[in-house]
Amino acid sequence: MNIFKLSIKNIFNKPLSSTISLALLILGIGIISLLLQLNSLIKNQMNNNLKGIDMVVGAKGSPLQLILSSVYHVDSPTGNISYKEADEISKNKMVGSSIKLLYGDNYKGFRIVGAEKKYIELYGAVFKKGNEWNKPFEVVVGSKVSKELKINLGDEFVSSHGLRENGESHDHKSFKVVGLLEPSNSVIDQLIITSPTSVWNIHGDHDHLDDDEHQHDEKKITAMLIKFKSPMNIIQFPRLINEKTNLQAAVPSYEISRLFKLFGFGIETLSYLAYIIIIVSGFSLFINLFNSMNDRKYEMALIRTLGGSRMLLSKMIIFESLILTISGFLLGLLFSRLGVILVSSLMEESINYDLNSFNILNEEYWLLILSVLIGLVASLIPVIQVYKMNISKILSDE
Picture 1 (spheres, rainbow, N blue to C red):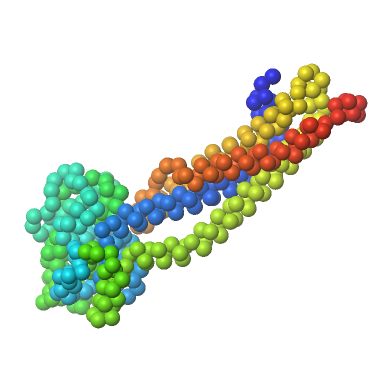
Picture 2 (tube, rainbow, N blue to C red):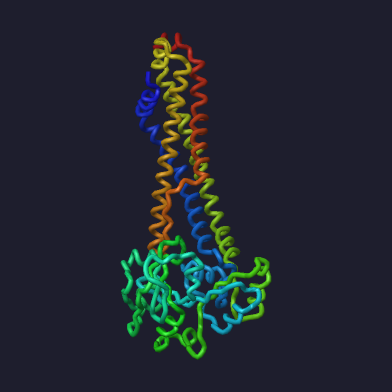
């Protein structure tokens, strides 16, 4: 007697109750898995882009906005700052290295960033083709940009003013592609990088630009990324800049930690809701098995009279429960991956970030164990009823 086939048959004999139990489990497992995946992917993406950056210096405003715009390039900058003043800060004995950034233009939605050449080295980006720029208006293109826009070496294009692609075009000067980067799983994949001189020059003759932002008697930059010589300097130096200068210093690790705390409450609430759904699915499964066993008492009694043992019937009930819970777990994982793809496509469309991943997290193995435990607990009382079954009474009643 094939217990597995018999268990499958019993599940299909109760399609409505089995479907409800399965759907609840899929929903609960799927929500928790989705939250785990998104939390892990976003944290990894954030951390990848933070390496080698202890502090960001920029214009006064929101410190979080400064970090998001200068490190992750997903927000508008807080303003521009004096190149001379930033340069003086970079020469401080506490500063190990610094990278000055200047941006405010785009090409088809992808940001053009004027930066020092060590900006590429910061993220360990490797050249797929070509080399770094050697003169103004030469650019290096990130892997995502070249893939989506089908850009090759030697291509030329004109930029648009602002960070969105519908800005006014700088038709008086074009950029030339001299380098293409390999994927680095960092923010640099979605950027077009050139020298700061290129950005200064392209705005030099534009009378529509704000004098405060683009005056060239004193050069301006948007932000400066800083790496300290000693981790201890992160305590003193930011406060010194914020109190003694007209600039703003923000610590990325602190601001991102604060951001995750703000989102943490919502994630935690959704997780609790998902666990409640899983518990409800366990009760639904128990009711399904219990009712199914009562409906099949005569069938089970016949199996006993034909030589089937109590252990055989118990295995059949446990198999039914485990088939439903493990199926719910696997379909829940599929549901979560579809959710990740959906969220990733929305993020990619709005801020050019790709979060697609199909890795199994360690926490998801615990979800599998939880699913198995729910299946075993739900089948416990029906199994006990099997051992208490009075075969003679059941057959006589029928």
